[in-house]
Image 1 (tube, rainbow, N blue to C red):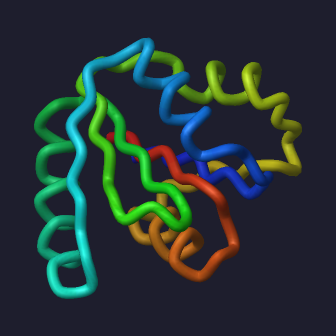
Image 2: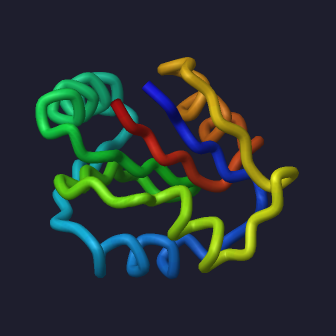
Length: 111
């Protein structure tokens, strides 16, 4: 599992629209009562599809993209990210924790 955590402020819907142009998408909308259950379901689906997921700050949704594309390259180029604007981690929980704590803007989750 390699996850891209974006710390630089980006327009969330511009990110979403950029990725949607390249892939089929399914979204999982959650609230305070079902977030843990939907996160578990989202991760299970992500493992099965071999695509990638997206989780963004201030958006109560997990996005699942079924088509694999070079999302790091797409995001880096389109949003002009430098190496200081993101980090890559293998930690399964860190992408979610950093978004929930406000330390990051978006996380792209891959298996």
